[in-house]
Image (cartoon, rainbow over all chains, first blue to last red; front, side):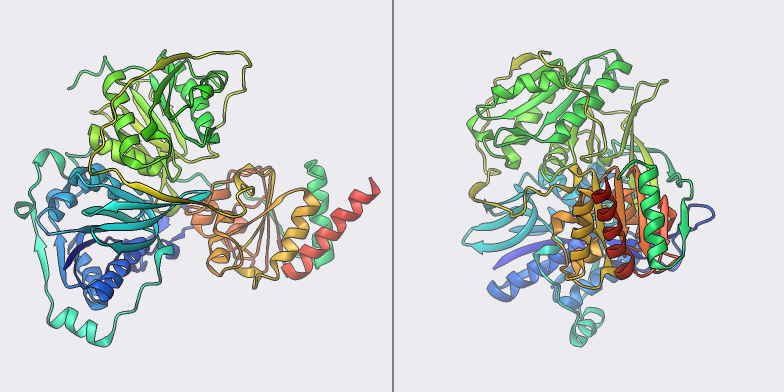
Length: 261
Length: 337
């Protein structure tokens, strides 16, 4: 029986984030939290392997107590066990310290395949997956669009800008999933019931994770945020409302002024 | 406080596929030249591959002072582990102060693996790089939180300072014919281990000729187009202007345009001379990918659409009427001239 670990992150739905037009700052209030889409594709890939070949699917998330919600969602979709890595000592971590912490947590579990999403929509770095693979000493295949288990290998279709590679990688390995991989299933009512009544989310705090103090949290992060600032807004342009022909004339005149035509 | 005086020079990972260097590598060399000037040091290009020595001259002409050439059959095609060994080996030996990669699907796979192996920081998808005059540190600025917050990141206590940079963001230096780089063949033993993967097949994508990040004029369609058929009018307008068609994520997700044409945070960053956004509301993620365009025109029926916030010229109206009318008028004008 295969053992699969899926790493998932709870993220704000950045599609719902709006800017305050006066201050240029983000309006975070009322923005829903979701399971990161690429991670969800990784979970779905794991569940399909479970459906086809049989597997134990364990989900791991690092984050505050609220991240329980995405782990319950994963359980309701069909994951077997859930682990929440949560401690103030892990907070403020950059991708290096995050990957070292999650890799240490994952190392406590049996695994043939580790799935992560390619990237999280709040950070967009795409770093934690490959960094975890390095910490675990296993191969990684990034940007997976198709995946199939053949004996002790995975066959993965890996996306590049203008081509794909089909690669064969020996398990244990780590795969970073793209949303193109699949269309994730919905939770079932029975699944939701079981996720909250029968299944458990195991919480791992600092003492439960075998990682050096030097490699966690803000202190273990090689990179530091020096400053953050709202993006400078561009000077406002002109917006006109006229009939279609007048609008077309207006645009033509502007393009001529700017020597585009 | 660690001593970093032995770490010197600005290094760039040169991405080549089938003997062709990715444009982003030249862009990085252009930026590296500026950084090296501030630090009073040199620019080195790290070229990995097999039988690629012929590419060294081009790297010199675009500004590399030195080319570190790592030639090995295991590097003939990109896979993670042998490339990580090569770049790790070069970093371990040469001790660069700064190491830059293109934020391509190769760079974003290789760089994190290397950062974990070297134990140093890595800042993803930077849009601005500068040297802090006081400390000499690399200031790496990147969009955060879906693109509207900017964060400046530093890597104070580890070396090299590493960053990936999105293609199309930096400018390549003008080519100087005949300028030669010093070539340093770097013999490194790449060891086969259980982290190697085997390439079974390489599949080319169709439409590879269309690279929207190179286009001077882009006519881009979004959710407001309503259908794939309606994209036809965008191609007509693009043809009239000698441009290309691109799309927002919503239009790609709806199946109206190919993924290769997607502009934005999860698509491509573009900075054409003219960008016409048609039926695009202007999500943060989209704007992050096109706001550096020289002239932005927005056509949308919703006057409150955020795209008007970045447009130089906006028209509120029915795209089904305005776009064909605009195309017609441009063609008429061209005929007169």
